[in-house]
Amino acid sequence: MHVPEVQAHAPETVSRQEPLLSVRHVVKTFGPVRAVDDVSLDIFPQEVVGLIGDNGAGKSTFLSLLTGYYRPDSGQFIYKGRPVTITSPRESRHNLKIEMIYQSLRLAPDLKVSDNLFLGEEPRTFGLFLDKKQMQRSSADVLRKLRLKITPKDVVGKLSGGEQQAVAIGRALLFDRDIILMDEPTAAISVSKVQDVLNTIRSLKEHGKTVILVSHRLEDILEVSDRIVVFFHGRIRDVLKNEKRQISDLVHLMFDSGQQDV
Image (cartoon, rainbow, N blue to C red; front, side):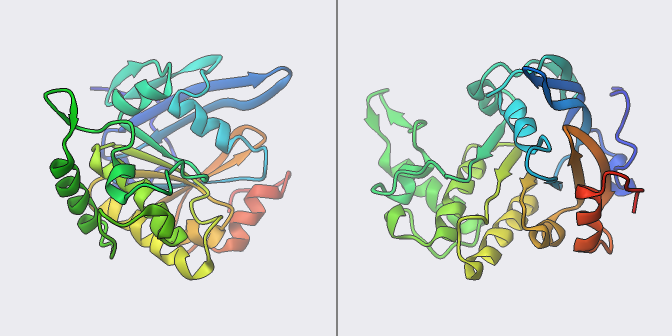
């Protein structure tokens, strides 16, 4: 099966694989502004891709196109070798197995961990009654895979910021999503808990998941990413292997309008 225009900057160890998701020449405009301007990118199985760029560079709009929150003006998505149309967040989540973890988390703080993990997708017996036993078992299994020291019965509002972030991430494992999109996952938590979130990202990769990470914390990007995608004025400026990169390299690519590849 052939997918055209394989990303030239992809690492050799990754490029031998068939892309999980390919984005081809995608454009999204808001009035006269091209928020995403002719973007093409291959996303491969079991990798962490860091997206960086200045505010307004197009990162968040790009994620919104992948989730179906926005629809592109032109371009194509290819999922597991077949062209697809992402028309809604529900289709993105269920048909393409993409899970979006928002900075706001969208958790119910008064409910237990198990209730939050299944929120909106609860299993039922006879189509009527919540299957609490299955929710407890499945939740415990997810928490164990993520190496978390919390239980399905813990109330989410009493957890630390890092633990709440992990609960939101846990839905991706619970419902077997292929791609997890994360928008600033460490922005609203204490510095002491940042490492917990980064460890959770590593656990997702260990379990075969692909993570696309947007973060202004460049040290986090450097710590967990396999590749780094640099957005600049709605376009992809460069795709880098994360090998011996420094924060100064990334800052140079993000802001220097006359930059040369580093």
